[in-house]
Length: 47
Image (cartoon, rainbow, N blue to C red; front, side, top):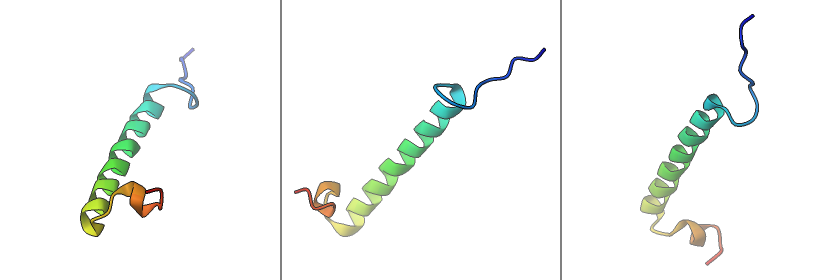
């Protein structure tokens, strides 16, 4: 029998995608801040 890894919960695939999406969000946030001249919090109306 082959061992099948779960597709849900904490596993290597989920952690890899979590890291990739976090890096993508950081780069998009930084690019938006550079283009608009406003911080992320001020763009959201929190400051």
